[in-house]
Length: 72
Image 1 (cartoon, rainbow, N blue to C red):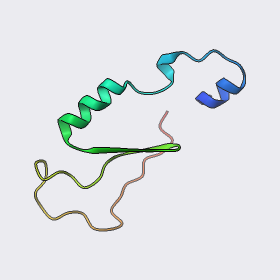
Image 2: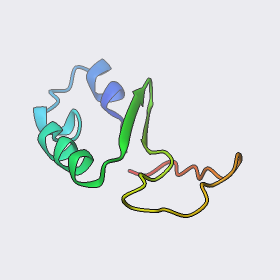
Image 3: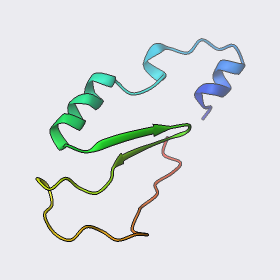
Image 4: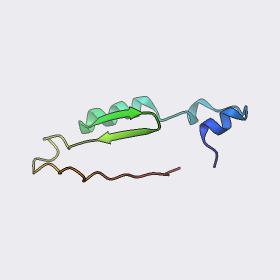
C-alpha cells in the first residue's frame, strides 16, 4: 500500500478525501471527550491524562504510554 507522499511523487492524482481525517469529526470528538490532540510531523497524539470528568483516580505514572503504529 502506497503512502500519500509516494503517490504524490509519482504524479498520481490524490483525492481530497484521502489527504486526512475530517476536521469537523475530530473537533466534535475532542469537544465530546475533553481530550487534547497534538499534531506533529508524522504523528498525532490523542489524549494525555484523562480529564477529571472522565477519570478521578490516580493519574498514570511516567512510562505508561502506549504506542500503536503501522495502522493502514
